[in-house]
Image (cartoon, rainbow, N blue to C red):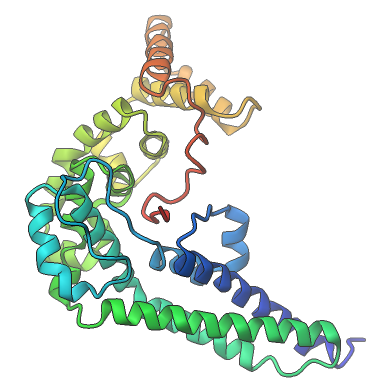
Length: 327
């Protein structure tokens, strides 16, 4: 028989767990600290945490940005600096293009983030007062986290106030600019999502599909030349049998290339066997001995020369490239 207090206690615990997860996002936003994302955290915290991390990243100029005026401080109202940032991005400033993409991405997610935070705050408030100490402690922690989340929302609201649909429509073009200018997260994100990152904009600008097709291979080559594991991770998925992403459509079905990229990925992967070994065996079965020898030699050479023998986790976990890290 269920004890009368068990149901509200369970609700409080769930709400507290969600709110505490959001509190971690608040810490990233307010303190600018780099936070890695683990899959287990994603499952526990739900979509609010995933969106919150994307919406609370602290921004910094991209490597290789032309020297000149400093970028606006993190969290500055986007509307005020939009025109100047766009002019700099159009002139080839990678830092400005990256800043625009990230800020626009934050503002586009703001409404949904606000809705989700409100929903979970209501859940916390509806949890009721528990009878035991653990329940009261969980309630207090959840309420503190909810208050901190409100402060984050206030900061994002100030940052995004006045940003209109025309400005938001510049998200994908600036992502593309930053990718072509060498910003690594923008490059991997553009390969992963491309113009599909803004489905409404794609309906109005179908030419973005042609732009994606025309530059995808260039970005792939640059990513491999730079030893970018994020790009290789996208390729690994694109060449999977039955893959239906934009990148898969751009690269097509190429058994030799699939084996090359899988082999290269395996050279940087942890030593324990896993799904990659099974994929490698399946891919190898489609190649002849000469093709296998050539692919193995290419992978070894590329791993040593371009990736400098670095493991895939050398720069942190390969999380969603469209969620930029704090710098």
